[in-house]
Image 1 (cartoon, rainbow over the protein chains, first blue to last red):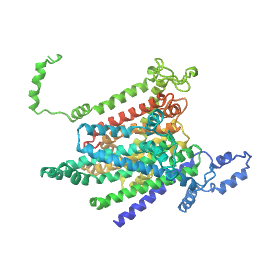
Image 2: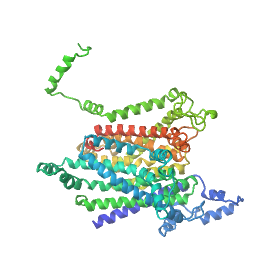
Image 3: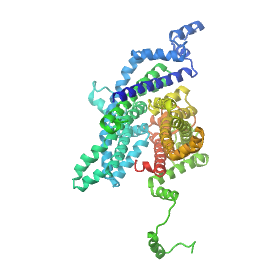
Length: 319
Length: 304
């Protein structure tokens, strides 16, 4: 187990380095000189001599080779220094410190909501296979996976905010400032973020439970006259819940990706909006920071998923 | 007798033959299974309709999708403009119809690109094994560290936006699942006896991959690809909603949702209609792919 653990962690580190380097390299090798962008962003539109440009280039380390620049960036990143935002005049770490908690907070609530609804829905669907309840749940789950969440958000705003006036149109308030307002503003974005993972959880749970329903030991349990409640809880759910653990691994990137769209729809100052704004203003230090943070979160999720799966199901450990 | 419609008594007599074992070819059986599935049929019909609408857009659209009529801007639905007009007085229905072109083109090219690259990477990785496999699969893992929409957004923005770059960005972002699927398929096919016998006859690696491994692994990938077209269209809609990947005055559904968002209270159709179009399209491709998968890859039957 320890050997497996070490190998998986090393693999995760290699993958992280690869992914951040890919984005880093694409940024550096594409046309568009960041120095010229920096100069043109200067409010004092003064003429800059070629020497000054070179001096700036040296100051930012842009006169070195791309791998060299990357190693320097990575070294700084490990100490918590993600560089400076050219346009915002702040450090990337400071911007992250503001945006990341917002996204994690909304994402975490969405994650919980998605699984609290999705897993029971999948179990009910599997037990009532072929009945109208199962068909309804399955069709709803398929719609949930294929719906454009930004549009679902707008649709909900139209009905619940504009027509009925029950919920605020957009915005984000910290729960520490005004809990009531914060909760009201959260309902629609959380529903949208949870939609995809919820549908995914329902489908995966249903499939996993259906696998179990046909096992011999379930038939034996029925045959020896156990009540439905006992067969379902002790035999079906207990065995079928294991694959559901992998769901977490799929839900986290789904929610992080969804936050890019949903934070724009609801005007939420989280990491998704930070990424979109940075990409549009070519604020590459921030883009690089977001890429790193998201990649770390996804890789850690995958690692935890894999390990917990092996821990929960002894049969997997042998590999 | 052949051309006559059977009478009621003849139809009633027909079930007598049922007991006689009849051979049904596997292809026919698959077709029968598909026809029985309502959602699959719904998906196929919608996809065919969409393709027809996209191909014959100039004939189907009631107005010029780019023709501005500022005097008639933000008009409510009427007989001449069934879905009203946008802020520039352009007919919403016509733009919706031309938007189908954008969506389908992006979806098809992005899937073809990611499918070709991903399958090649997966097949080589699975067949060669060793460090080649580890290298390829770690690159695939690296692509998967970012959520697909964020990776596509980042690449598209870095490449400079526009429809062409969105296709490239989606084409790259969607490689991983194909590579993984193909890698797993190749690993299992490689162990089959017929591949071993081919190799013992001296067949070269690339010949084995191209003529035997890929054709045998293709059916499940085809079903998966059909579904992926839907998800590519969904991702494209997301990107054009964010403002990347539209070449004005071209029509893209995601961008239309965004443009209409500002007038949600006064003219909700502007935003809600293109969104519904996205959802129906993605749903249709998903159902079609789902049905194909059940038939082409019996091992996965009952998964969805």
